[in-house]
Image 1 (cartoon, rainbow, N blue to C red):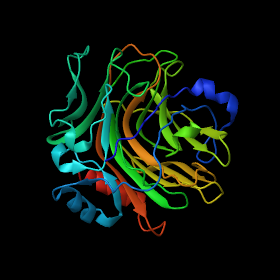
Image 2 (cartoon, one colour):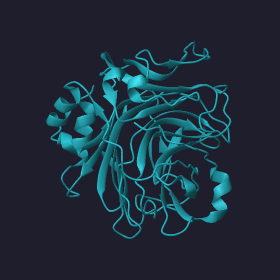
Image 3 (cartoon, rainbow, N blue to C red):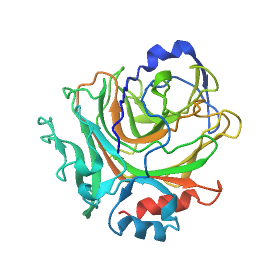
Image 4 (spheres, rainbow, N blue to C red):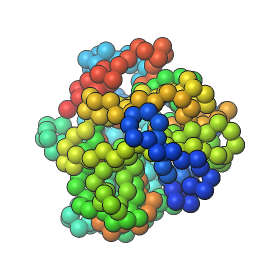
Length: 333
């Protein structure tokens, strides 16, 4: 996969002056501030992510998902050398999937005694299966201007088309976080046009301070013209530390009321929105990222585990269901 010039620099506080922000009390509309992150990739090229072996095909069959609709995926039970279509980003490195060492990318020892920053570990709930691990330390080198441990999928997301994103995430307990300790975990979808400096169309954000980083908030962003953004913040949801949380997202970018964002957590819908979402950037396709990203200053190590991140196109807009995507992820267990 072609390496992109990824200039990530979230600064949510600085960007608020240019935003119209509304607060919501339930699924639907919302408001607040959100990290501002940029990246670069222009249109089309890029094939869908793929893995070798029968694991993903078997999961797709079990979940009734056509393999032709899978635009990107990563499988922790398939050797990195047999995977393609995404890259890693950590400690200043941007290896393509097949170039990530099977024992992972390591750096200096953390307070927990671990050196792994991006790679695989045994599933703490199933020692017969592997999961992806994304880990950072407060003194790690920056990657494109901030500290991050992430996978990036190719730019496959087009306005007006419907997509599903699904994965399981297990956040290792990071204690109580102080004010100003801000991060994203799980997944985000970003504009392919880096010149505008847009925030993700949606993300899962964690803030230190009053809630001590013990909750997360869904953010969504829309841009209809120029570089102005409307950001919406949803109510806090407790993080189930040390437990697997299944997250399924149905997404359709649009600058009008045909846009869509629906999110399910452990089978329960937590966001149900129709209206503008995403970016007005003709000639560019958007892309998904997975892992952990902290654009602030922090003083303790962070570790997030992921199972079976996948991006699926839905050619009719109703071909798949949240239950089918959740079943696909659970087949990896």
